[in-house]
Length: 201
Image (cartoon, rainbow, N blue to C red):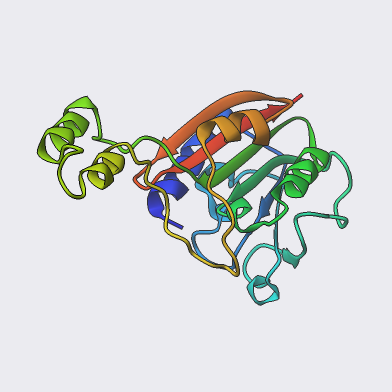
């Protein structure tokens, strides 16, 4: 996990002050697991799940489980659910979202990070018009470069074991956090990572 993303999750946890029981979906036995966020050090219980059985060791209990059906957890059993860089690898991510809603108690916080797409930083009107002047449609390749000026960068494909999706901030707000009180939507870095934070109603 990139340090900027780890720091953003930590800052958002400090801002929204979740307590109690924490679940990380996609937890790994490494120093940059979200279970190690300083902002959640005082929580009562930290648990992780990962579909990969080779990642089930470390200071926090990490269970081998499929996030599409987290049958080892009861309804409304967590105060905070963290999920970063998982849903793009999940062919049926909507099932995981339903499970997040199910295991999160009313008033609990969901923080979900995904690779996204947004307008390229620095690709404002001046940049686009300069490219259009330099490589007008009448020149060979002009259409290609004009298209690049309007492009939205995204994180490269990284099969782990597969890579299916990229998401917009609107998808995070309207789909991932549907039925939640939306507290924050942030995009970080280039290519962008989008983090959505919601409180379950």
